[in-house]
Image (cartoon, rainbow, N blue to C red; front, top):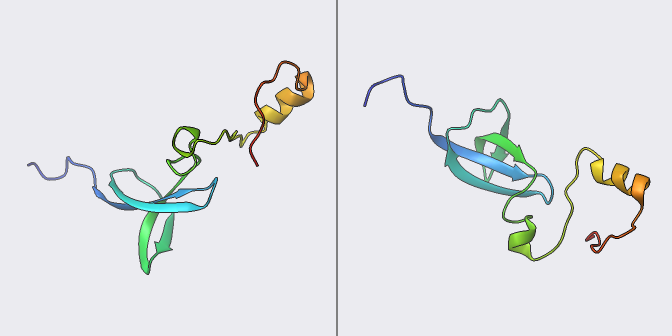
Length: 88
C-alpha cells in the first residue's frame, strides 16, 4: 500500500449523550475531543442515537429532539390527532 494516502484507522470512543452510553470501536473519523475510558485516553465522538437508545433496538418509543422542534410543534398544534406518547 502507498504511504500517506490512507486515513488514520484507530480506536475511537463513541458517547451516546441521550443515555450516557459509551463504547469503543475502530474508525477513521477525525475529532478534536478526547476522553478517558477504562484508564486509557481515546478520541471522542458524541452521538445522539446508538443501538442503546434507538427505538428499534430498545422497543421503546422515545423522541430525541435537541433543537426544540417537537415542543414548538406541540405548542402550535397541541395533541390533536396524536396517537403516540412520549416515553419518560
